[in-house]
Image 1 (cartoon, rainbow, N blue to C red):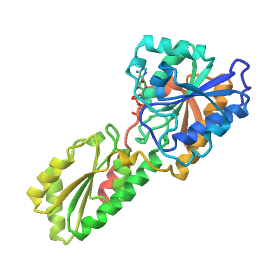
Image 2 (cartoon, rainbow, N blue to C red):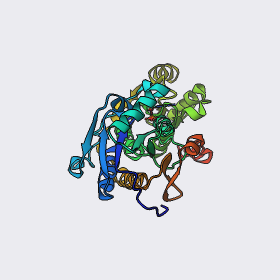
Image 3 (cartoon, rainbow, N blue to C red):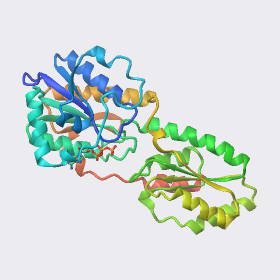
Length: 328
Ligand code: ATP
């Protein structure tokens, strides 16, 4: 981080969680509150994302208000999707509410959509710093997002359990994990759980007949189970299970892991990284920075221009995806 002086102009900041909740968000909130107060700046918690800002659900936060939350999943501030905030009128009203509550800048914790909202707020004269919070790992400017580590470990443990029973009953299991537009959870679990097939939205070119043929061939070789990890973005797990069972004669069941992947106590990595990112965001906001996002790149925590960060593209590493197919 570049050394900067604390700004005389920044006396009060707000903190918001927005978009989907992710384990580790509480660690980030705690760090923002405690670091800013340590810098001599007041903090206000804004409840339920941008929706709560528009409905003025705003409360002072002291160091003690974030006690006993670092180990808890979800977000103590709550989160919401707020269509109104996509309109200029909503953004102008939000800025007026910030001024009314003497909030000079905000730390927003969320995904790409949240960053877009934050950027719009800066255009209305309110400083904003983004922190990447999403279990999907699908923010281009950073190699780490808060919640991914916990979510992928939660999914991996659940899949291990399904695999045990699948082997005992000589079943084929299709397990659907989260990731509507991004296959990171599916890819990581697929490799970590030793899945035979990994289906992700970035590579929608899988061939069901090829999967069926490999199940039949593996059965002949004496393999007792077949595990398919299906990203939410591919979907149709139940109908896929019916078709595979009909074509192979192997009992096939679909399990959709769903929201359990979002919950639970954050991993050590999520607590630690979220804490550093929260402190970093509070520091640069107190120093007068705006329109920046905190990122983890090449082993370091850095801050980047939010507009440039939002223009970046991210894709699944081709080599890693190829490797995932040959380790079965
Ligand atoms: P996740 O990755 O978990 O879905 P996200 O932050 O991308 O998180 P979104 O629902 O896309 O989730 O965005 C959260 C909120 O940010 C929206 O409900 C809306 O209030 C605001 N927002 C999203 N996109 C924009 C935009 N283009 N302009 C202004 N505000 C936006």
